[in-house]
Image 1 (tube, rainbow, N blue to C red):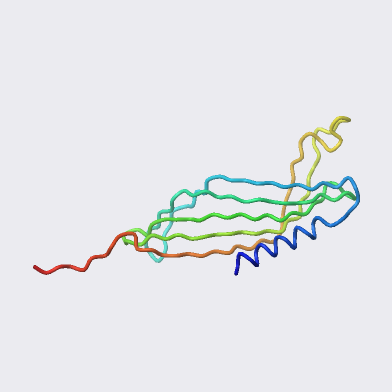
Image 2: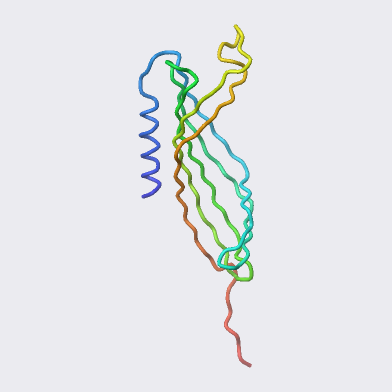
Length: 149
């Protein structure tokens, strides 16, 4: 149910961003994938050891034609951390999905006649975000009752 609500929210935001507007505006789509290095720490007094996992996500956005340096974007990312709870036979796995709605301000650098918007466009981005997470614990080894001889 949460995934359906998340997809619906992303679809609605996409439709709002992609509405008809003046020419010379700029729509963009980004995708990214890479490793997620989660820091080992303590939980309930026990050491945790996280595995390195794959993280992926995407962003869609729109720079406005009336002021091409201002834009809006929706960013979503996902990863599934896994690890071991030290000193116990418990392993854990989880899912973390983040969604943010961002305002973007870009700065044209190295402008010329060939590149009127600049060859390099660094930007600042800020906005609210929400994270949805699930954590499961699993026995990683069978626990055997002591046997009597």
